[in-house]
Image (cartoon, rainbow over all chains, first blue to last red):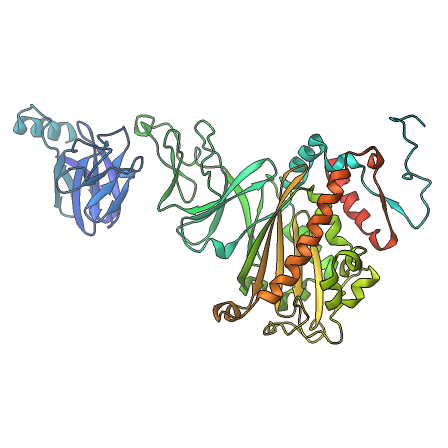
Length: 118
Length: 381
């Protein structure tokens, strides 16, 4: 589990980038929190620098649009989805549970990352 | 006399008292002199760039040529107008190639996609997160000084701009006698009724000199001289301080046929009514004041022998919004512009002639143009 920050520091419309195994972008879309891989699958750009539109983020470089709920791109130039991650708020603090990398045992991966962060 | 030899021109110390010399012909054609003017005048003075109302929402932008630079003028999210050198900080590509347009969120270089927010900061670039030592403010767009006055955006490319009050407002004060005289025209509150652009094949100084004198008025401006009969005497309003040329007795308005104009601008006082005032704001602006509208010229010198002129006719917003017929009032100065720019182009043709190598002469009603020549010389050295 990765500590992201205080909920009060991430108002609606804002985003923040945190480091897990890979960089993760956390968004506050009108009060709903979402986390996805920060790096666009088309070219190395930070989606946390992108433009939040409803439940999607548009990459600042080439306008690839990713659904924050599924990680799927709405169309070119991105073809591959980004991973989504579970977000949890405890006592006004935001945490992300990083999804296991492809091929890893989910529980072990989460525990490993959690240990590093703590 | 052999060809190639030419008698010393009439210029110099032996001129009769009635005449003063002009600048030599090469001042109007020599690319080196034009370059010096770009560096020492257009890139150091306050330069009138954009009608602020044309940038009517965040993301609206215009690019204008100021000296040797392309300048990007854009309205930000906070409603303020910003100006930047139109150059990507990465490898120098021109950022915006359009003359005007609108971006939704950011300016993006079409080369490597370096992306800048409306306030100029670098917000994204490929692999930027792998270069955490790159400061996004430091590698933002280079800012240019901005000032809004009379509803226009003025920019200055100098590191330390000259006093706006002493230069721009100073030129208005010098002509009208007081800085307050222009206030009643409420220029910033007027609305664009018509814009006409003129691509003039002449050096910018030809256009300034022409605007400053009226020796030519009776010859090339029949319509204007009908409306302002005193112009037939050859003395421009700019020959005096605080002088407005009076409309002819039977003239009802500042229109191509002297017919009635539009509603008078409320702040215009009795003394200013039925008069035409003209102001040159160096280096590139002319302001014409009449009771019911303001005609505002912006010049964009492009090369030694080519100048783009944007002329705006500004009226009370209710006049423009009502769809009132402004054709006759626009037509008067549109004709004056065409007549003037034709004359400037005719002079430009001769600037490389041996005949004009040492320049020409100014008659007494044109002697005040000498002050402009001194100003140019003082700046370019």
